[in-house]
Length: 547
Image 1 (cartoon, rainbow, N blue to C red):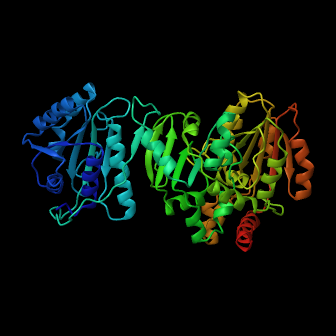
Image 2 (tube, rainbow, N blue to C red):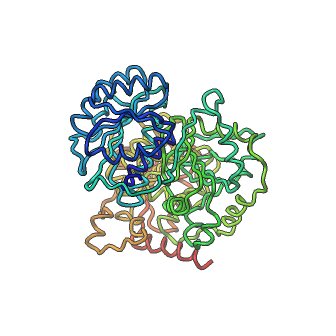
């Protein structure tokens, strides 16, 4: 029988799945559930060693002989401290030693990840009280075991917290756990990737989601048709032009009115992601609720990116190289699944707004000249821009890596200073006033067109589902203010324009979007009403449910 502790069963199952066959065991009370459970697995050879320092080096010797990960189990505290010499040696010799310490709740360790300075990866497993805890434990265990053989081998540390009672062992079977694997490129010498291709061809509902990318990429023409037909490609403005064919862009508007049955029908079996931040909250919710059978993340760094709690494979290579390498290996199937998504998007009408910050962003997106750079300064602007078509041959930049507006203005100015293009910077008032000191330097030139949308605070926060603040709360969370940028813009050498209604907007936009670089940088401050903006956005999404 196995331990009643979910995290213990997860750890045992994943040690087995990742090919660990030898385990050195030190005596103790806190690690009893681990020892009892380990002894139930016939594929494990367990070696009892009483002295902890000796146990660490004994496990090191086993791992050297096997050229494979070997685990050593001890209690936290002094037992773990005595594992440090073996872990240090394993680090120098690049030996995949897996040190597992059983701890109390809360942790007795002053620094739960005590091996941080020595091992390749140290994780601290929480007690499992919920499905979210179980998902976290699964990810952390997979991360640690994968890291023991990533870019050279080396030791890792897994600390598992166990509350009283620890001795219950009444569970008959191990749980079936999600196992992550990492492919360091698609190189047969490194690892046979044929099973990956076979799984790709077996799963017919294939989706690719492109996250934030800072470049534009054109796929080889001989692969573009295959890739565009065999996957549904979901992309956002921040992804730039990095997808083949005509991707699906308006995920928020598609998913908002979608009933549960349609969601289930449109859920992917295989999800492949690449790039950084994904902005759409509804897409994240959709993929977390309707988890794919497999999720592969493709990135050069090979980091674990388990954004939807379904990650099964990490493919460490350039994403465009990956897609062009697998394109000839894909078995052609009728593109019914991509067509379902594209037909839904085709039914969406172009959004129409009265004078508001949404309209302002839409008018600008339609008017910016070819070949410019467009900096979207914070989350509200990024989300509004997603409602409108992405201009052709326009670079999109944004500080959305950490999903915040910190340094957005300064980053955009730095980029523009080194760029020969016209650089449009669209930023909300709160972000601008927090970062306005960025204009207090003499490096940037007249290729800058800055638009500040000033509605006295953050309107987009007021549209979030379930957020119904009172007036006092609203003042604090939206950054309410009555400031204007006019004096500061003019002082810094900008030609200042202002807009208060649609008529003024239409008059100012041709000046603001003129294709030639002007003598001075341009500054356009657009004034809208925060409450009206929020209401118009809500009305737009409500209208989608009626169609």
